[in-house]
Length: 360
Image (tube, rainbow, N blue to C red; front, side):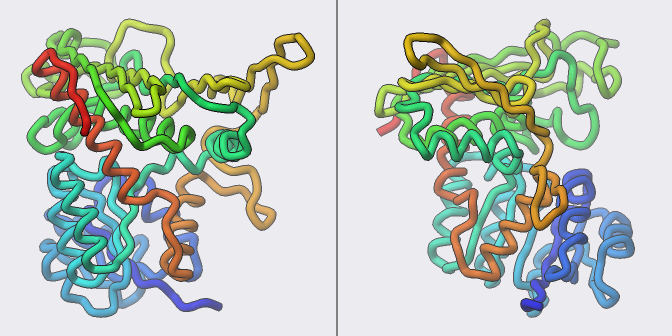
């Protein structure tokens, strides 16, 4: 058996318990040795459920980072603390997986990238939708040129009524925004990755606070408090890349529409097009006729790996640990994630000023 990787979790809330801890606990080569949360009872509960017998519990991440046997840190905290904790962990000699988005501000994301380069430690961001079966198949098609030159795309992150009413999701100071930075970030990352295009030229954006002010509104997780809803309820952006390609990004937690798709994209290329509707559809022209191909795939996971099924989170974290063990580049690089943060910030800035935002 290969060496065991000792991992610490900073932030033991919903994303840690719903994604990171269950997937890491399945991996024989992983040992969860430290847990930290500002509410120490949450850290203690996570340690009891997932930790190694001698795992330690902290309420201050600075103390955790002094633990010498920790090789990898997972940052699962609110957006406003991603940069601070990640940089400290890198400087303490740890590899870091930070949950999405990379940071609340693009300037902080840039500092995270600089810290990773300076320390020589690995940094990745939790864009797990790249690891779905439909995403992986479409990526292979794009790399093999089946779609040709992809010059138009739509990034979809639309909920009809799906406002998260727990935690700090509605707190602009903690999160930096609403659906754009929460779920729009996934759709944008997926689209850029499939296109392999990370050179933006100009961005135009809009953001709305239309439905957020309504009391007792229908919502998947119960009515929201209009007085606490400090972020946008929907936001949209048009991105022109330096090669002329156009990306339309749509994001909402609350929007009067039946066209609801989350972490999906539509691609149009010179040879074919693709969309993630009921699996994966490819459309094109051959022998003077139009065609459509439908791939029925489970969008939540990968069908088989060594004879067993894996969720996209399982695949994501397995490949991350493989990158640490084998000293290879992670699938999600900090350079790519930085561009996502820059584009999200540009959409917010354009929405605020009413002006287009130009990149050098």
